[in-house]
Image 1 (tube, one colour):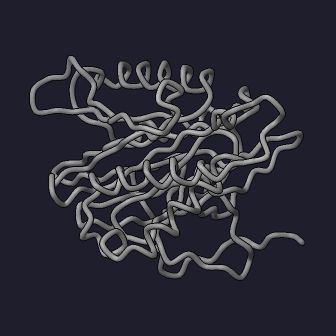
Image 2 (image 1 turned 60 degrees about the horizontal axis):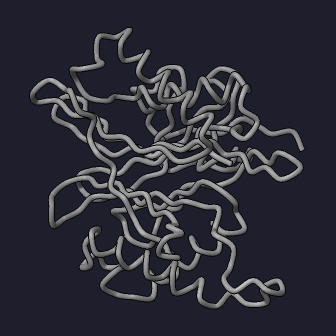
Length: 280
């Protein structure tokens, strides 16, 4: 499945929403070069997923197409808050066309996928994160908002959402708390790139077979633009540049910045970056 995170990063007066995930699809084999974060056909939001690709990919593509064909959604006249409701309706409407059920089965199987909608709301002048999930009690998709951590000192906030398997999510939460405690930030300050560091370490250690591949990363800025950021993987010295989960080929260039996974606070400028040669 997946380990994905979306968190609010604050450095000085600058805030940005960071969305990160591993890049592994599993199903009898491991395929470690797959996008789990989709940039939508509007600049202020992304949709990420965890779960079964049989359920996730069709709904993500329908979400993308529904935004592209609906001018208020694609132009951002439809605020992120309203877009969330639109996507829930698209998901539920799409599932009405499932047929050919096994004999005696009256409704389709519950979808084994959840989605995270992350973006910047121009109405609220704030970053927002929602988990779009299936609720069996209403036989449809609904949503829940990410909430800030409680018990924080005045003037600080920590907002984060997780998506994925229970075991790696539990491990990620425990490690994030431990890391913040070691740095004296458990009850003060805001997130920087600590969640990225936790995800990076869990992938590198390889203890959770459902997560793997490179870290894929997207940032959303307060000027309402989402940008995929490259990651040197598995390290800056030995790795190649990976963008949205896929290692780039030797003739490809990324027009965006690239980060060193061991020093993720700083993005290297994209100008002049060439990827390492991949042996064919």
